[in-house]
Image 1 (cartoon, rainbow, N blue to C red):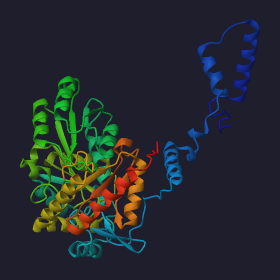
Image 2 (image 1 turned 120 degrees about the vertical axis):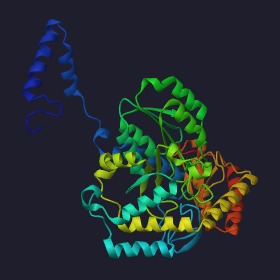
Image 3 (image 1 turned 90 degrees about the vertical axis):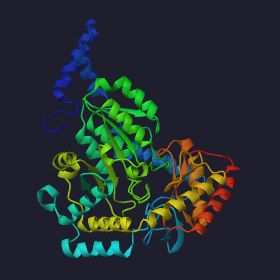
Image 4 (image 1 turned 180 degrees about the vertical axis):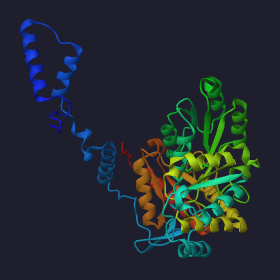
Length: 458
């Protein structure tokens, strides 16, 4: 019973008694119940299933238990949450053992760089470890604007705003700029943060086939006039597949249909273009043709957080209206300082980008020559090896671990079962010997696994 004397269905004991009495009377007379009485009778008789209120019965946990049981059945150790005890670069230390490392997106080897670490330490001495408030209130620090101005300069845009989380950047930007009368079209392989932002906005959401600008164009032909504002969202480089969109084509479509274009550069800044300045440099286009240019600081820039670049009007709008900025603490000053120094090194040492691109291309070509399935990959910093089974992906990851190679499996439901894979992040720090050795081990062990019976987690 609740404090008001009613049960969970809003019926008092007296009310229930009256209902039962009427039910018995109607059974004697043959009269039927009205709709409201039937609903009330059903309500207080029905039991609430445990999975609706028991935290241990949440659906996600059930899926984890299924996978854990399958892994135990086939003798597979959990490859996740292994603790790294130092800076993770082309090599890393786990449980006191050194591994060739392909599971960290330290693309330019700037995490742990002496200049980057020094900049963070200096910021701690000057500002402490926290901004201690939302930036609009009292958390604004000079280092924030220095970083934003530098990011805008690299991307070739008017202005920039930084957020404390890359995922939250997409969610709050898309969620706050668009609404119920609008339409959002995103790639079928879009990152979760893009999808969550679209859901939060309340806009109609449509998915176009991966990197298929012709299908996108047709979808706009069919739907554009039914909505006020329309947003196309694509990525500078796809984090699961390592391929890139034909951005000039997307810009043509954007202009033709009078819609907005947003590009997520999380994995393309520091990777694409001769200087590593991203998708605009790669295609030699003016970044102003992209309405919303998003990026993260946690990959090439050796820090944590996200940002949006664009026109002054866009950035001013976000700084005063996006919940992820207005209602969140400002970026930690040492994190901002680390990202800013990494950005300086990116500009000063383009050879890091050249070496990264060379390493990735070598890995990609060797993988193809070995008959490995790299899917849509185009040979940049992210290279998948698709094995088509979650079980095989997990087994292969553990076998490589035994050989001193650290690479994570990507399994269902993160990807479709037939797309289960190992995902390799290349860096400018990897050596040719490490890359060749890795491909030899992957090829040999995968061939041996595929000769055995194939089981699936699902």
